[in-house]
Image (tube, rainbow, N blue to C red; front, side, top):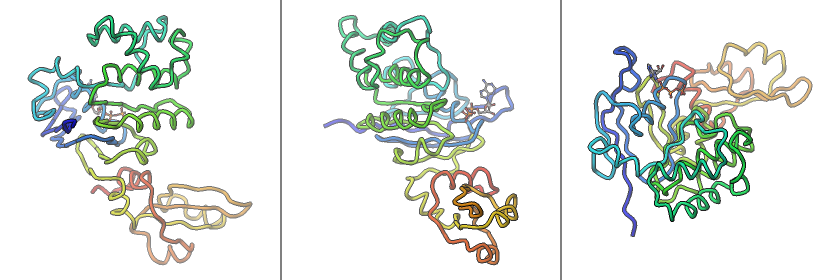
Length: 301
Ligand SMILES: Nc1ncnc2c1ncn2[C@@H]1O[C@H](COP(=O)(O)OP(=O)(O)OP(=O)(O)O)[C@@H](O)[C@H]1O
């Protein structure tokens, strides 16, 4: 029987340069599964990851991993997690295998186990065919996969993935997302992103952060149910569309014929007259619409 992994963030605050409140009394609790940390630019997502990984020091609060403060022995805690940073920091002239060997050495893996460990992570991330290629010859998607590969070395119980699909095309994004969901068993995987599509189908729970504060944490289903009244759809004429532009927050528009447009809007307070004038019907929101509603509108929860 495996022990339940648990990570508890208690009252974490961080102020940069005495004035910038990057995190303000953040309280969160995680057990096994994938969690999405969503928020706009500057919300504090990377700062949270940097505190978790010992790159940045907190100003207040504590973080417990399986009941013990990670700050008591942060160097030892580093053996428990893999971190995929937002920015690539790879050595372009090394081959994939050489780079992974270097990371294995940094992570203290015994020489005789290194080959097997490299094989394992290359296989998991489907990079085996590239093992002898130089890093500077890899595509953007392959480089992201290599970063994920390095995070997986030593099979850590915690994975902190900062914008794992940044810069990828839709196909590569889907591949990386599928890979992440295949890894979730018995691990806590925190994914920071401002892309709801990265999170919607794979996260057990979603955390919304804004200006350093947690504004919402719940399962995707519960969030979508709670915000079920914010979204409406209709098919309207081009003229009607021009009339509505700038007056109602629009989440999606697609032209379906020469003069017909499919439109989705997100706003709880659209006047009944407007809804009936443009034949709007209630629609189930997706996570992106909830995100837009919370962060783009004046709708703080
Ligand atoms: N080293 C630093 N020195 C000063 N201010 C910083 C530093 N790092 C981050 N900040 C500020 O702290 C706040 C939170 O930044 P952070 O990078 O954690 O946000 P984020 O949610 O990860 O944003 P993004 O999605 O753009 O990466 C921002 O106002 C940012 O400008």
